[in-house]
Image 1 (cartoon, one colour):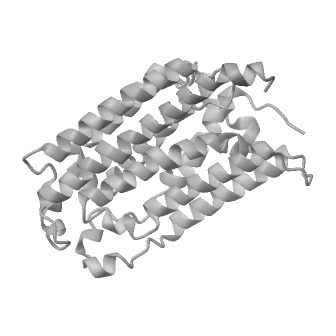
Image 2 (image 1 turned 120 degrees about the vertical axis):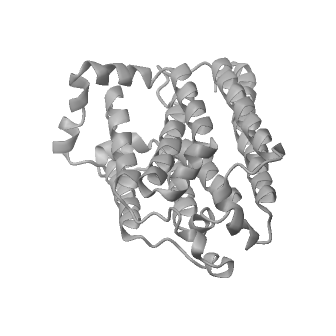
Image 3 (image 1 turned 45 degrees about the vertical axis):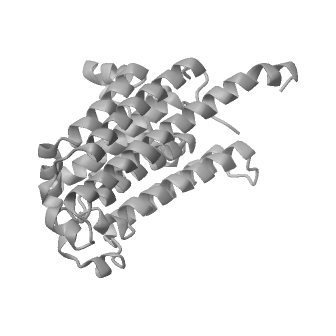
Length: 311
C-alpha cells in the first residue's frame, strides 16, 4: 500500500533529520584532535554518545517509515530495496566521516579534513536523496508530529524559501557559495578553533549538498529536471569545484597556518598536505560530478532504444 506525501513536507522531514545529526550539540573535536600523536590518532574513534544516538534515531525513523509505507506487510518491492541500500550507504559514509579515525585525522591534516567534507557532500548527501530518506523519515515520525511539521509555511518567508529550494539555479548557487566561502582561509581557520562554527561548517556543507542533489536526483517525476539541464548543472559544478582544487593544489603559499605544526608530525610539509587536499578536490571530488553527469547522459541516449522495446 502506498501513500503520497505532500511535496512541502519532504523538506521539513529532511530538515528534522539534519537537526538530529548536526543540530544537537556534540563534543566535536574542533582544535582538539591536533594534540593526539599520529600513531594514536589512527586508533581513535569518535564515540560521542550524542552523535551515535542521533545516528540510531535516524535509522530507527527510517525503519518505521518503511513499515508504514509497506502497510506493515511482508512485501518488499525492489524499488524500496534499492532505496534502503542507498540510505545504508549514506549512513555508512557519515560514520566514515564523523565516527572513524578520519574525524581526528581531519584536525591534523588539511587533506584529512578535505576527505571528510567530500564524504559528506559527494557520497552521503546523494545517497540520502536516492534512499528517499526524507519520505521514509517523515512517515517514521509520530502522527502528532506529522500534522504539525509544516507550521513554518504559515509565514510568507517560509513559503518563499520552500519554493526557492526547488529551484535548480538556487540550489546550484547555494552549494557553490558554501563551498568557496568555507575554504577562504579566515573562515576555515575560525571553524578549526570554535566548536559551534565547526559544527555549522559541517551542517552547511551537508545541507547545501542535500539541496543540490535533491533537485538533480528528485524521485518525483513531476519536478525532475530534464536530462540536459541535469548534465549542465553537474558539469558547471565540476568546473568550479575543480577550479578550487587547482588553486589549492598549485598555490605557492600555505592557506591554513593552523595545520603547519600538525602536518610535520605526519612527515608532510604544510604545503604538501595542502597540495594533497587540493588534488582530492581536483580529481576524485570533481570527477564525481562528471561521473554522475556521464551516467545521466548515457541513460538519456539509451531512452529511445528502451522505448522502442516497450521498456
